Image (cartoon, rainbow, N blue to C red; front, side, top):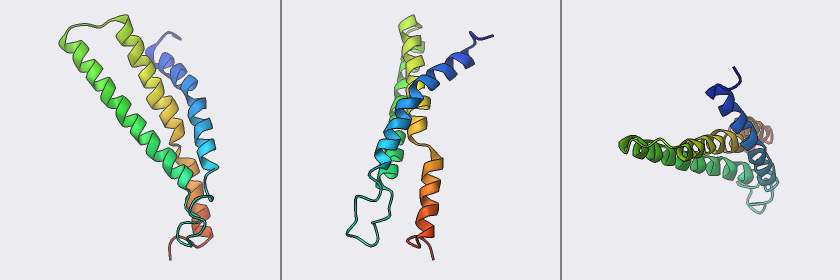
Length: 122
């Protein structure tokens, strides 16, 4: 059925994903612009690095918030519609926005490019 929790979770993640993708793209434009004067840092993907760190911070913050909300609603035996909607939106922020912000494929591609330029590794 389309009204299952799984489908609802997928839709909210799909709605939050494009902004995460766009922010990651904008941050990738910084790559190669910082540390140009340093031979060691001139090829380091600072934009990608920052995107991954930001995604980790968002994911951890949202997970902690979800834990606190869940704990408090269970302790008070309160499970309101408002709490359910908030948890639903937080899931979208964590899995959709932060998930796309921290895509591994871009990071892996940039590591390969770094190794091809012989700035990383033996």
